[in-house]
Amino acid sequence: MRPRAYQDLLGFVRTACTHASHAGRELPVIAFYVREHAIGWLTPSFADLLRRWPHVFEVNPAFVRLSARPDSPQGRSAAMAEVTHDLARDGALSGWRDELVSVSAHYGQPELFRIERAATRHFGLMAYGAHMNGFTREGGLEHAWIARRSPDKQIDPDKLDNLVGGRISAGMSVDETLRKEAWEEAGLAPSLLAGLNCLGAVRVEYSVPEGLHREILFVHDVWLPDDYKPVNQDGEVAEIRRMPVEDVIESLLAGDFTLDAGVVMIDGLLRLGAVLPEDPQYLDLVRLMKP
Image 1 (cartoon, rainbow, N blue to C red):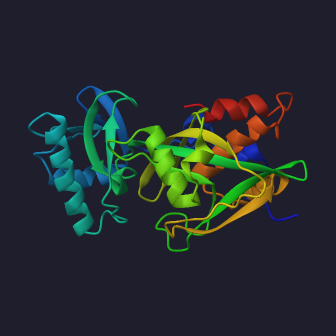
Image 2 (cartoon, rainbow, N blue to C red):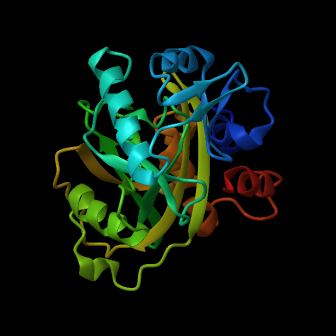
């Protein structure tokens, strides 16, 4: 048996979903407000950096408030663009994507501002993504299509992912994002996604060197013909391979998966019956992954 980074699937989920695990992982963070909405969490050191822009932020020991003028989505977006470009220029923000994401008090509510994707962890903002597990049957047994991230990826190079996953950019819907990523990452034509619906959502939250990774992932499952092989199109995936469910679980426990994709995979494994409701861990897994 391979060495395990996690004792069991519950251990994996507790690491990825620290907001719900009550595992003593509380961080010294400061609330980040837009108007009355606490939309992010900042480390004290990062909050202190924001004193450089007194015309943009009100910085207090207990909280930071975005006070841009004009007080509108466009005004806030322009102010955050100024700040993030300066941070990137000075080396305090890396991995620039040139991709804007939308920030709101709650998904689907009016937009508060837009910000460069690379800055979401620094500001502890809730991000949103669309993910899809790819399943097939071989010899009557269930297998999953698993992607390995390119070694050149800025985040989690060489780690395993579920078949499709991507951040929802500003102005994009869940379905539009999923279909875009399905083609780019796995070469899945629209005909293979006919009738596909969102099955729910999971939430991940964990500390990273930049600050706090917070993300809600809208989850989907697709069943592919046994003679079909997904093929990456955008060069961000090193390989895609078919794995028996038992091997997927061992890879999860070994720490081979990214935390966010791993939670989506575990959510899919519950639907497959890899963990039954009678298992003592079942309800804890469901509870911890809930948004």
